[in-house]
View 1 (cartoon, rainbow, N blue to C red):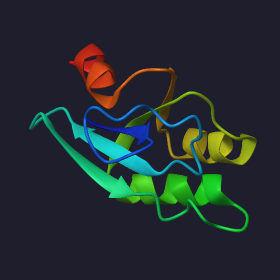
View 2: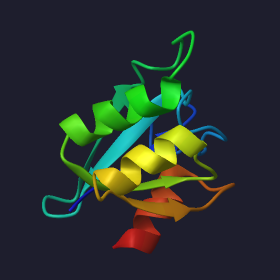
View 3: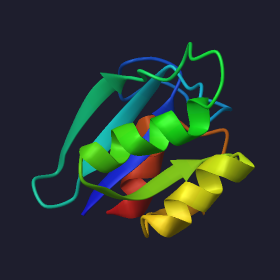
View 4: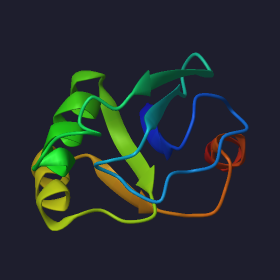
Length: 102
């Protein structure tokens, strides 16, 4: 299963971002291959609708679960519609989240 984690920076020691739609990066962990790739969030600087745009991006990467401190109303509705599971977590590094998921 592919899992997206909001990240402030690129790297396993980076901290989780406090935002979903405007996070700096998405760390996408692939549970089958135990690999993590970092992608800049293309919705970060959107004038409006960053949450739904971010959802479209992670969905295009095959993500089935996303970890973030919180989700906006529109993003949450779209995640539910696409059946992408939301996990609320905060104040951890990307590697700490991955260890919990394994």
